Image (cartoon, rainbow, N blue to C red; front, side, top):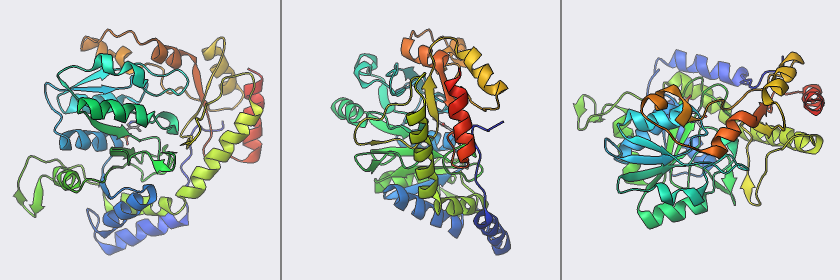
Amino acid sequence: MIPIAKPLMGDAEKKAIIAVLDSGVLAQGAVVEQFEKDFAAAIGARHAIAVSSGTTALHLALLAHGVGPGDEVITSPHTFIATGNAVLHVGARPVFVDIDGETYNIDPSLIEEKITARTKAIIPVHLYGYPADMSGIMDIAERRGLAIIEDACQAHGASIHGKCVGTFSTGCFSFYPTKNITTGEGGIVTTDDDALAERLRLLRNHGQRQRYYHDILGYNFRMSDVHAAIGLAQLSRFEEFTQKRIANAAFFDSRLSNVITPKVAPGFKHVYHQYTIRVKGNRDAALAQLHANGIGAGIYYPVPLHKQKIYLDLGYRDDLPQAEKAAAETISLPVHPALTDEELEKIAREVGRV
Ligand SMILES: *Cc1c(COP(=O)(O)O)cnc(C)c1O
């Protein structure tokens, strides 16, 4: 089976881990600091605050923006569960707005009707590595005085007219093994705001500025130096990995004609965390056929957030037709940088037969 994702771990990662073990400094040391500096530089942010996962990155960003009980946060229902759950973690309520059926990202034209006096923030998700329509979203946020927290957990290096996602406002990234670069488990929050960066650092580390003096209620959301060492080694190949994903996607674009392939608007850079197609006819039969022929295709995601049991139990009864259609009609193909030319050929051939 050609896997849907495959982390590329080389000698650099192995050497970096051993060096951390030999140093004796395993947590919140110089390697974490270097990873933060290098990641911030790679995407063009002023600050990056490393954390334990993409989920804690979102949680921390919401805390730092003062989002809490009684507040509402507007986001996409077509995403990984963590986007909505991080809002629940801080005691606020996610409000789901339907997606654009072509980009799979939140539809800005539907946001304003969901804004209430309780709305505090918008979390656009740059799903599959494709940037959300940030100009439309920022325009609304500015007019209505809302914070923006970008869920860029699938979109390391994606950009709009050269500006990377995660730098339009507060950015949240994941380094889970399937993501475009990994630390094993890990995440990072990016911002250009000095005061917000300071608050993020305090909240990440039990509210302490000085060891064992705690100013505010904080958390242990720290990344270890072992994980940061893996991340530093991955960063040295970040551009190479991204270019290979883009080249793989271009190959599929040129070869697939029986399915709807991803659209990319002028000026938008898609980094293809997933290469997601829409099939006409029976999606589940198409998926079963691909699996039977050795293609490890996946569904991201089979159930939109407002239809998940946890949200049904909370009383959610939204009707979000585009998100529901996307959950029922899409298939994501392996597009990761470890694919060989033979594997790419085989994937294109098998998709052509469905
Ligand atoms: C992976 C992911 C997260 C959460 O990241 P973890 O590191 O797994 O906690 C959040 N949002 C989206 C869109 C993701 O893909």
